[in-house]
Image (cartoon, one colour):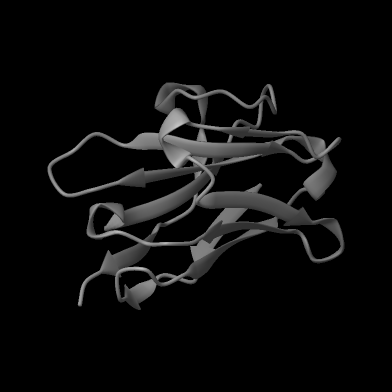
Amino acid sequence: VQLQASGGGLVQPGGSLRLSCAVSGSTLDSGGIAWFRQAPGKEREWISCISTDNGVTYYANFVKGRFTISKHNSNAMVYLQISSLKPEDTATYYCATDRASGLCRDRVTAYDTWGQGTQVTVSS
């Protein structure tokens, strides 16, 4: 399975973005797809995950309703909608999956397949 993240860019505070993760090499209904982010000088942190077989979603506590994960099985895409963007949301955003278990977990080490990352910069 291969993942490719896209949709990042420069956004003003308060704006919105939708990030996309294209899944190839496997059917989308066979495992969980997670989103992480990593800001300069900080550790990579888990944001959300969606179980692509049943659509169950999981979110980190800091999300507080500003992030929404979704999937579109027919075109093998997983999305992360981010609203009310803040400068502290500036980071490289990654999608990831664990080919072995397909489970949603909140640890970086639980995932063995990563997309290349897409940069989100929130600045006026």
